[in-house]
Amino acid sequence: MSRFEDIYGTAPEAQASAPGRVNLLGEHTDYNDGFVLPIAIPQQTQAAMRRNGQTQFSLHAAELGQTVHFALAQPPAEHFASYVYGCLVLAAEGGTAIPPLDIHVASSVPIGVGLSSSAALEVATLRCLRQLLGLALDDVQIAQLAQRAEIEFAGVRCGIMDQMASSLAGADRALLLDTRSLARRFVALPPSSSVLVLDSGIARSLAGSGYNARRAECEQAARLLGVASLRDVPGVDALAALPEPLQRRARHVLTENARVLQAVDCCSDAAAFGALMNQSHASLRDDYEVSTAGLDSLVALLQAQPGVFGARLTGAGFGGACVALCQAGALPEVSRAVLAAYAAAGHSGCQLVPPAP
Ligand code: GLA
Image 1 (tube, rainbow, N blue to C red):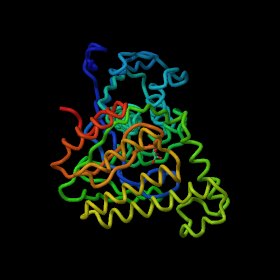
Image 2 (cartoon, rainbow, N blue to C red):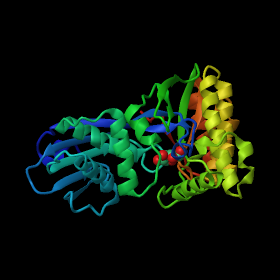
Image 3 (tube, protein in one colour):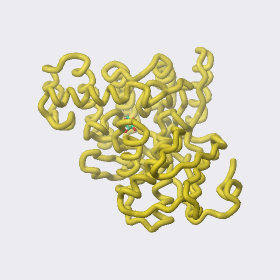
Image 4 (spheres, protein in one colour):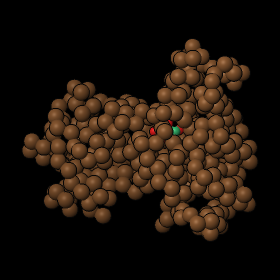
């Protein structure tokens, strides 16, 4: 894996990193002003920068072995570069002159599986820029700029969970976030439990998927109910007036918000926490319809395994990763047994968290 020095022949002036995240509960609630409960994962993205004294920016992505060149007035065509470009343009719009830079990014966050590789890239880029130029941005403002970069430059109308998690969460405790007020606090995992993340091996394309369509359905449901967002609906009884599928979509959002708050109340009880994860998966599968047959079978194998308190798809869905809460000591055997059974059923999965040594 290349370093900044290998590509540009000199040391960087600034370096920063940011983690990916796995969401434990609260899926598709953030763009409805609801509650989420992500935790950072050990894998990080690193950004390094140096003023290059030229007229163009150079951006090298170590994983791709690719360098692209662009100016602020001339966007790069490569999709991966649009996240970095978006951050630079938004920082410039904030009133700071951004000089042309040599930029190097490297990442161990798994890409395209629902662990927020794009948020990690955005937050690492903005942290590095803050350090290089002394930008007066706090960690919440970094998350907000990163979210705008994703919406305005990568075309995903995402909520703010991923960028807040990458900017503010740690890997030892979960981050309970109210995405409306941005009020937040850290929540310990149930005692003697560990987080396992397995990749289903099913490819997922967020922008090309139904993500934006689901968000539009939620907005339509809120409009029909006469509220600013689904957060403002008092209870599921109020949903009876909605046509399908809007009623099911809104029911998922309301019940999922309630599950996050319940989980935080019972976070000393791993079995109760796990049961809420199982309910979340059923709701994402049946009401929100963002699961797939492969994800359902991986989740079913996890849920049936001794030592697993609960399991669900994580992230936007349509493929990608599943998360399970396991008895800490049982984790290696859970992972081995479930991946073997998943392979026997003709699929190809792998363990993502904890990362392979
Ligand atoms: C993606 C988005 C988030 C969130 C999740 C679903 O990760 O970036 O904002 O909506 O999907 O919970």
